[in-house]
Image: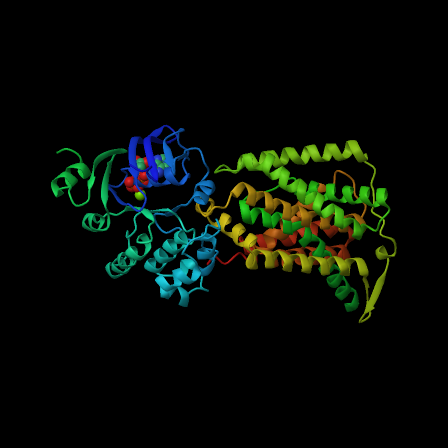
Length: 235
Length: 289
Ligand SMILES: Nc1ncnc2c1ncn2[C@@H]1O[C@H](COP(=O)(O)OP(=O)(O)O)[C@@H](O)[C@H]1O
Ligand SMILES: [Mg+2]
């Protein structure tokens, strides 16, 4: 078996005294798409912040391309090719749409994604390139957040709540764009509330519950009953 | 009679240029990293002394000394930020206040030790006394130059902020430090660069101050207050507003001094308080996108 792109082993995360993640184990192969589901407060965001380096972890807990990245800062992790589309978009409000995208390419990593490619994927952003990013609609802001992450030409892209708070028609557009993004051989991890969407877009699925993995399996093989048990807990 | 008032207003405006230079660095640092630098005035004085030393050792004109003092202060700013100030930044506003207050004390005592308490002045030859006559007013070349430099510095900072990759990084880090970090920006380095830029401007302010008036190690606090008032009057985070704030402060002072020489400083503080009472966010607060 080839070396996995990302290997999580015994990952713990804390907010001061409060432990949010308990000994998570997970692997992501190159080109693989994982769905992460779980109730509010299960630890999905904490998990993604840990991988991206925004939360420090104990040594050996996060390995990427065979290298221990648990202790690296977020900017160092970004330079290695992990990008995050954060929950709630979190665009830079002092920057225009175009500047938000350009700053995504700050790491200088080479690859297929550049301003022209992002504008080809989301043409509306080209029209609105000069306006402040936070003046866009929620859906357009999500496009900027995705484009900003792509500009880094990552090998692994993390989507936290990819469709939360967006209108159904926008969600459809974003899912329509996804194959064009992760079809490039990029690996992805997608946090999604809509379980059928999560299953349809992913190869494998993990369910988190109160900071622990309560279910994992191939997206085509897990049953609805298993998922609801893992999601809400026994009984 | 009216000519005297016009003169007071014009002189005050030019003086405002110097205050804007005191304030620009404060404004920049607060804008990028929400740090209120209590030692800012002492850093201005330190730059004036550095200028004095360079001028006397090398025997060059003080304006030429800027070529050395600006990079020296900028380098000091970068190291200060990385080695000391970055460690104090966080959710709590108190640690940076305490540490920069401590720095202020250290700088004053250090300058006292090295240069003594005797007032000093930087000698700039004819530049100090030269004047030109415009529409019946006699304007000093030095105040005019100072004002022109202030305009150029504010314009330059504004350009850096809105038209360069560095300025983009400053704005991004100011908006959201975590997300900026995810973009591959190391905020500790970006903060260091912001402090370097701020102290580069401080170097210019210090040398112009040292040519204009005599100085000693204790005057930093007063310069901090002027800079602080100019920033607040103009509105936080707006550099052109900071220039306007400096001018308003300068004009209030010269008009106050014209009514009664003892009222110069008081008139400035009153103008500050009145504006703060009417517009608590200053005249031109940053319009958020
Ligand atoms: N900044 C924080 N400080 C303290 N506790 C936090 C913080 N952020 C999240 N938590 C807690 O950590 C747990 C996991 O949160 P989170 O990772 O945001 O869950 P999810 O993304 O699955 O909704 C929750 O119990 C939440 O209350
Ligand atoms: Mg979350």
